[in-house]
Each structure stands twice: as structure tokens, then as C-alpha cells.
Image 1 (cartoon, one colour):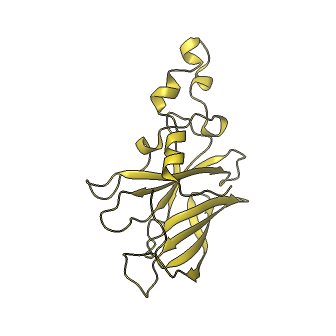
Image 2 (cartoon, helix red, strand yellow):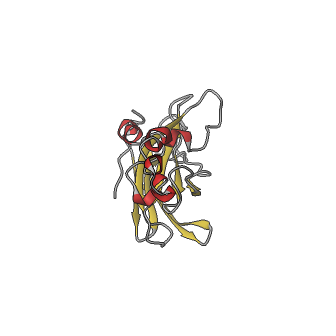
Length: 185
């Protein structure tokens, strides 16, 4: 499940909670479980811009880069990985990957982790996939040879959930970029 970084494609494919709630089985006399399905059991996702963490500065707004799924905690349910950034104040703003438990309900997604929160290379996620429970991320970022205005290297990260803690299994720097990659929409 490789993801691209198309903000418009992922943001438009999610429905708002009010849109999905108005067309539920409970509203027609069905059970509450069908009215509020698990994230792993439905195509009707929350409106992720209302769910992800706020940006650091008031003038910034979250932007959804992509939404992918994969079982990261070994329970058999497809968990949801939301790649997000914030509107840029300068050249670009780094990404984070927020992970939600697939067994939680659409009306109240349970965040089980946020990745890339403290990486100094300013990673801007290019792709995410889940491979046997390991979250593999490829991102553009800056190395020690440049300023923060233009990502100049490709970074690869591998994370795994152990209990309630996310561990970094590995981080490598790939090729250096000759030009600034296209960032954002």
C-alpha cells in the first residue's frame, strides 16, 4: 500500500462525520454498531481535518497529504495512517504521520501514535506503506549541508509499535537531490 502525496485526492475522499452519520442504520432503527462502524469496517471515514492535531501556529491550518491503511498493531484490523502537514509559513512545513486504531469507531478515532514529530531533517512525506506491521516512510528532508528552505535529500524511516510505544527501527539517508522537489499541491 504505497501512498502518494496528493492532498486533494485524500482530502476529498473522506466524508465528514455529519455526512456519514445522517445515513446510518441507527437512524432507520438499526443497531448502534452499524451506525458507528469501526474504522477498519467502512469506507466512510471521518473528516480528517477535524481529527488531526492542530498546527503549531495560529495562522497555520492542517493539510492532509494522504490517508493509507495497514495493520500496525497485529490485531487483524486495518489501522488508518493520516499523513499531514501544515500550511507553509516559509518554503515548506514538515509532515507527521498520525496513526488511528482500526478497531475504534468512526465517530471517535483513537490515535495510537504520531510519527516524525522530532526529526530535525524536516521530513516531508512522499510515501507511506505498512509491511508486516512495520510502517515504512520515504520523505524529502534537509541534511547538514543545506538550510531549511529546500529539501536536498531522501530519507527512509522504519517504525514498529511495541506495546504502546513506537520505536524507530532504522533511518537511512538516500540520494541527495540536485534540485528542490515539488512540495505541496
